[in-house]
Image 1 (tube, rainbow, N blue to C red):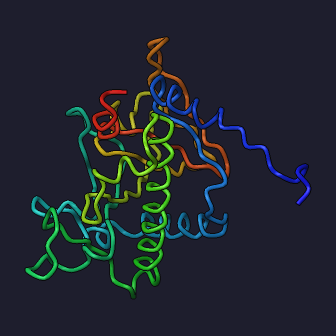
Image 2 (tube, helix red, strand yellow):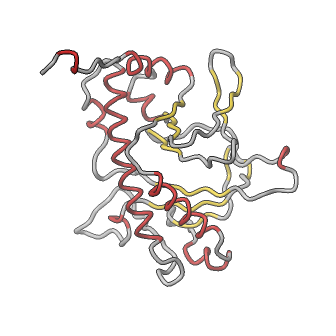
Image 3 (cartoon, rainbow, N blue to C red):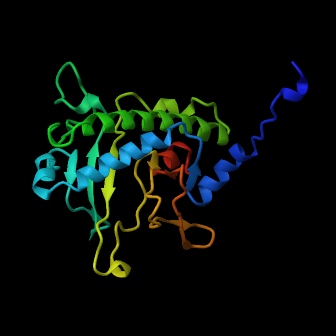
Length: 238
């Protein structure tokens, strides 16, 4: 093999990830492995769900004893968000918990009927599994950037975990300048893999050094990664 064909790998970006994550907590990832067609199919299915009549969406409504399903209103920091959501997790929670299938919580996925949205449940479940795979890969990258072994975070992340996926819809309002889709908050989990709408720039992050809010505009073909509270705890507040 000609030595000139041996690739040179710059690990500077990897090592800089730790510093960037500490200062902002957000970054983009590209070349994530999901084809554009697959992402577009997910977005089409999501829009189809939110375009359903409210009465239909309410057939899968979240309840006081089940946090999965359609969310019509929600509070953040005791303020009402201007959004509607749909929450679910892996197919292992499509059925009720039982003695043969124990899990951390007794919540159960709720879906609208297949006759109403053909393929919706299957598309969402497939996409969820691919996001879990990306999340595990990212945690290995974080570990190396922090000077740990790639599998460092595996001790905290088991198959029976509370990973979940949320579809968000922010309806148009009469006074958008005075309307907050979601109030400022930190994400309680380890990682949020966020697919932004390419046509709407609405996300902001708090920059510690300048103590200001900065825009996090969408970038086509990328995911926006938000580092959550759990990674901060696991990394000893790094």
